[in-house]
Image (cartoon, rainbow, N blue to C red; front, top):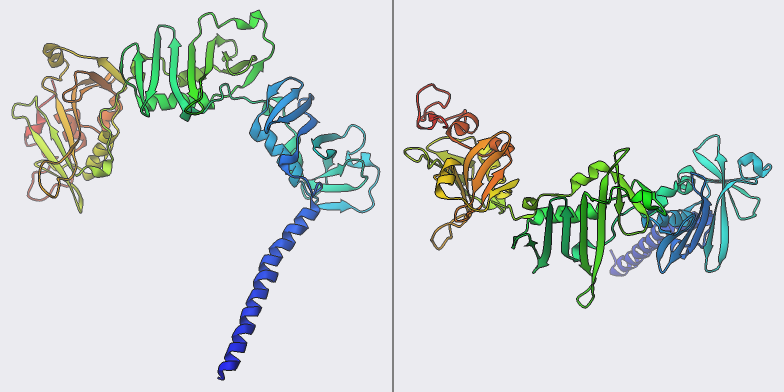
Length: 484
């Protein structure tokens, strides 16, 4: 083919492609967007331009909402911060509400529920005020009749859009009991009958400063801050009188949290007081506003009221995938039986006993995130430790990382010693070189071998290699020694 002809055809193809893209594709999108905008009842309205709204709540109260410096507030029937998500959604619904159709020759407005007394939303912008009138439902298509200002035109709009304005007053109020940035928290003072803790954040870590100086349990503090952030009122007592203060004489829980908005900012205090249980399984709470908040009585369980819960209780904390070797020892047995498990390409294998690979993998997972439920004692003498099965320990579990390529010992990722246990109080445990005695949840006995019998009953593989004894056989074996 002639090179000149080829070039011309290439130009034609490029022009045709450009036409398809800009007219058919991009142009089609813009035409569809323009058509949608033309159907909007308030085509020039942007949600951020709405500065006030007035309507009647689903409970019959006359409501007025105002935006002040970008934040929504209730001003009628009372002064109160508004729920930002709910009210912003209503402003967005006003800007987006669009006609699904128009009644060409409408009858009297009353026929469509748009006459005097019709449900409506009056809203304000910098340019003026408008009213959206909402009537009854259409016979089909799940739409609602609507009108704009004094225009007699009758539109049909999606009922889900119209339903955006059918709100009870409670939904419009800011129901968060406290409002603070939990990432900016620097100090916490929590008090309850018979106990108190003071916590401070230093170098991105939480520390307990009262009733003793020690590291804090990061998970407990995170849970506390999260529960404070998400605590919502189920109701309010506005303008409380002295009779409403009953239950606060001996609060069930009090807390102050101090946050700092920036390096040079002053600390700001947010305070919470949870009163005693009231009739109807509710508690009254003092929070961010003068009104009293009402929350379900059971929410008190969200807040730890044990000093030990705020103390550092982590016995194992490492990525489970880093463990390539596990040692299980029984130092209290006459010959101090020991099992070593290693992770290979085919999974976990162990010797001299054959343990189920899945059980070994779960054991490593539990060791990698092991936290105690409680602290039994800060220290004990040798005789006390012996009586608790910790000197020597009944079981010692250790997990190791891969040995360095250059040689040397592998890093020990975790080590925990287990002592006596019972189903009600849990498993006694220690970390080597630490005097603290912990209690673990007894449910962990399903995944950590708490003694020789437990190992045989729960962890031995039922698929032993041919050259090893069947673990189900009745032949006496080393690990058949009973627990004392």
